[in-house]
Amino acid sequence: MTILSFTFFSLFTLTVGLDYQVLGLTTATTTKASGERYVQMRAGAPFKIALFADLHFGEATSTDWGPLQDVNSTRVMNTVLDDETPDFVIYLGDVITANNIPIANASLYWDQAISPTKSRGIPFASVFGNHDDAPFDWPKEWFPAPGIPQLICPAVNSTHSGEEAFSFRGTQRIELMKHEIEHNVLSYSSNGPKALWPSISNYVIQVSSSDDPKSPVVYLYFLDSGGGSYPQVISNAQAEWFQNKSEEINPNSSLVLPDSVPELIFWHIPSQAYNKVAPQFGIHKPCVGSINKENVSSQAAELGIMELIVKRTSVKAIFVGHNHGLDWCCPYEKLWLCFARHTGYGGYGDWPRGARIIEITQQPFSFRTWIRMEDNIVHSKVVHGSANQLSYKTFDQMIVILLCYFMSLIF
Image 1 (cartoon, rainbow, N blue to C red):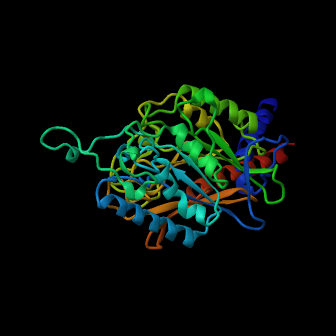
Image 2 (cartoon, rainbow, N blue to C red; image 1 turned 60 degrees about the vertical axis):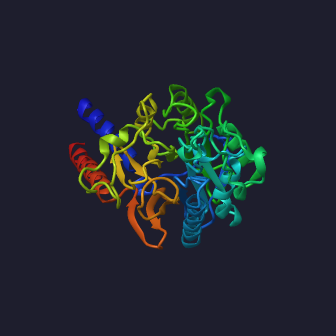
């Protein structure tokens, strides 16, 4: 009887813990003020985020084609922002194509990329991709017969003119981030811990309850997945930072407890876990999406971050960019692995552009995500706790009910 009671209690604790959010019993509160920068939900409304991925502003600056792509990218963002009216925008890496920008201050192109969001007064945050501080690539057409490159400077997009506009050293991650933060009161981005530099965009934003700014509804984690000036990895040091930071502000989330705060994670280059769930020959359930036109181009190595994440039951999804020809979401362990949608006209691929949208509900916590296209069409909707997951959890609940019934008969 003792063994049966222990088994029942253990099963009950595990199952009910998994299902608190489905049953609506989660409270998005914590007994400890996190001290993280927060953005507050509006009363009576869900919190909506737009993800702009792979804009690639400043690509092919020496051509007529390049600046036109920036105009087209701006049009896509304007359409999405007008259709969705988000509360927050995340720039998910490769905001600019630094390897095509020969001027001293690549932040000029960064400013252009964030201007549609800024002009509407919408707060935003950014993470770095592999092109944002990539070394300058000398175009082959710049080399005439004598072998001395001509300097073709995009003065039309620069505050400089003449020879002083040229600089081929690139603009470093820290310079780009400092410029964004210092010149934009709407920016929620951060330089991240100095111990992690040159990996810069590592930080947390708290989405707070509309009733209490100290009451977190969800934590948004941002991680720099490298590329450009250093290897395409999330390092052991970053993984350790994530572990320490997440346990500090959201303890007990590796256990199945109802009081842990949900977490969403954003970085640019997909982890190698994405290869494990990648759809083959189209997109089929349980995956959801519309384009699956290339193989996953993942980080160079897996150095511990995914192992930590899958142990945290509070992590609900990871969102990445990088692959322009992928926009699917697939379940992995207890969370979703999602691609954004290629937003910018810069970069490779001729697939229609759009943006992934995330909508967060406070009580009970849930999130939905879908893709809004440049032609206003919406598709590829995912609901956290969707049919397959919900039916699985409902089955668990039925087991608990039956066990309770039999235990009542025994006692």
